Length: 276
Image 1 (tube, rainbow, N blue to C red):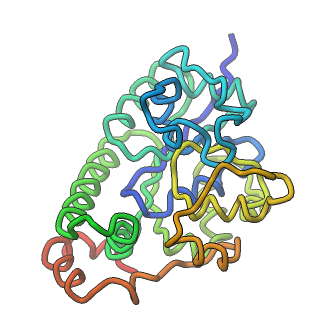
Image 2: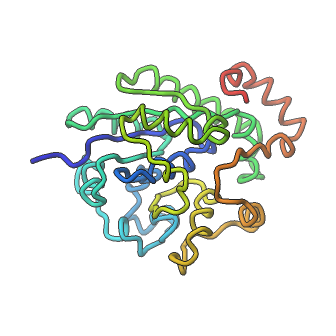
């Protein structure tokens, strides 16, 4: 039987580094499907899990991809390719155990695994996490970032397939150049419409609600009753945000001097490779 799934591209790195944006861009290619955080397929039929964790972030329970999707085998990506008709699946799960398991599973097939390590200035990541989780201690969030970076560096070093490191800041300031670079990397033809990701239909599990809201806002005529709802503290920013790709440097105004100093003490040396 001829395999439908030819390639799987994993977007690794720390959460809040722009993987939802990158996934939506790559998922706007005519032959690719952005699954979001595919690890959440483990929750699809788990009624004890919050609904928001186990349905499409944009469509909700009536999603044409996920509403009746049942994982039938370990070969998740072949099942997704058959369902969507796309030969390239994009998975932005960050969990290293999941990634290692999926990469090893794909070794037993004819599909090729590709790995992107998406990097972002750690100060921006911590600021984004503090904005989302204001009650959490900055020290804990910095430790979590350091641990995730270490695990991703190990994954990247051990991965023997095609791999590349990309900075979120480069993607946001030079989207055409970086998207072309990634298309060359993935050996797919560049399509300029990929940059207009907000005009394409998407069905992600998990991911950044703010970035996904730009899709919902741009497609209000088609998405009459979108599932996605923003928290009140984020709504004003994204309501006024254009859908076009823009660099987010809010951390420069929002991150307190105390947290900046703590971050430099704990992670300054590691962050040198991520600075922008």
